[in-house]
Amino acid sequence: MIMSILSKPSRKLASRIVNEVGFEDRIIGYRLRERTGPLAMTLYSFEEVVTFLRDPFPRINFQALQSWINDVMGDGELAEKVKTVIKEKPDGAERVQLVRDLMEERLGQSKGYGT
Image 1 (cartoon, rainbow, N blue to C red):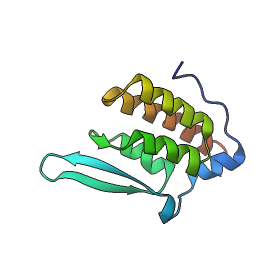
Image 2: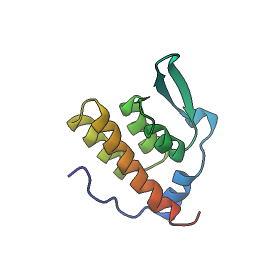
Image 3: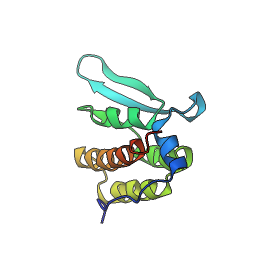
């Protein structure tokens, strides 16, 4: 099931989740606005991505996000769950919500370490 609880992250993973990444490891998303059109958003942290996904009209390449979670954050478990969401929900607000919920869960777990 997609929304199963994520296992507790290691201290090392939690540290990566709560800290910013460097310029080379950033991810780009776009916020859509009626008057200005798409606005590029440069995201340097896991928390910034979560906040970005709360926007009314976030646009991001979900395959790139899945790779970013796996390769940059080092969170294979979360990346697999995001991959499942991408397969089951090919587009739309529901996919954004499910991915955001998973990422919020992981962020909450990681902040629990107090790193």
